[in-house]
Image (cartoon, rainbow, N blue to C red; front, side, top):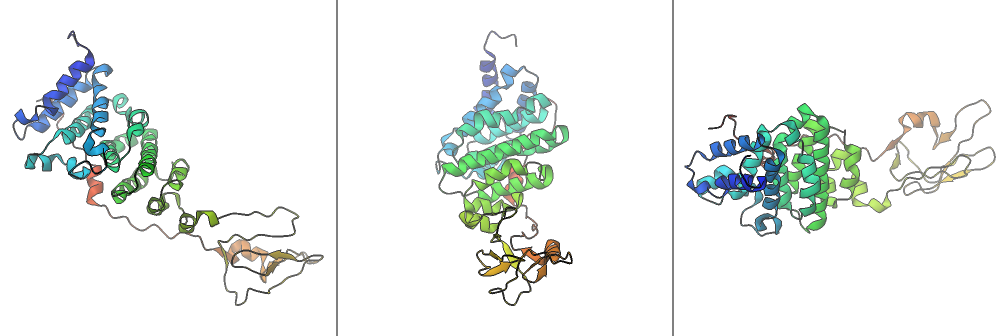
Length: 343
């Protein structure tokens, strides 16, 4: 800190020792250098460690990630440090992620708590490809447990930002190749951390995604398949008191009825007609007998209908078990070293 240089220059030169000079580091010692740099940065003031955020933005803007089809490796291989080191490939992308993991692993909660703001203000505006989104998931995934333990609201903020990022990428590309791994991460977050706490926050985002993504994420907000396939045909009409007609929703089905057409019931003065997609010509009465009894619909007492005489056909089945794909494990893997001492 006593150097007569701008803090960003000092921090960048410290990072370049690893990111540009990793070829001069003996094999097997790379992770010790990653661990040491992460520890040093956590003890420096913000003008120094904020450079980590700048390097993340530079990483996401690399042609291999920002240009669709611009890279020769898929993002999962591009982030596999062990595989790249064994094959002698370029380690700059994987090492940048490893340094970020090392820094956040050793950082105070004030430092790691800046992740939601980083995604919202700097990362999301530049997202255009799936590869970039996979890297973002890989960056923040290992720290969801820490957020959950120290401040649950941060988990909610990060998750909402991931949905917003997914929506932006969905509108930016014509084809999605990594839908399943990304959806696996979102389901993992739901069942391990958030539950239904952010259901209302993400429901509108999911409804704006392409149908393929809506089908995969429908159990997060309990979307109906009919609503996904035919969004314009789903409507809900509510009858006002005193009106002469009752409109029945298309999702209502009548059980145990051998004949629907032509069934009528009379009112003391008028007969109300109910018509909808599958109930053509069915008449509904709400007449109250002199003895104080209840009205009937299709011969079923209204009290029985309230108890389940008419069942909805839109009920969702129970959520099946979701298999953990290897790609999900890689997205949630912390690449930072375990030891906490500077070598």
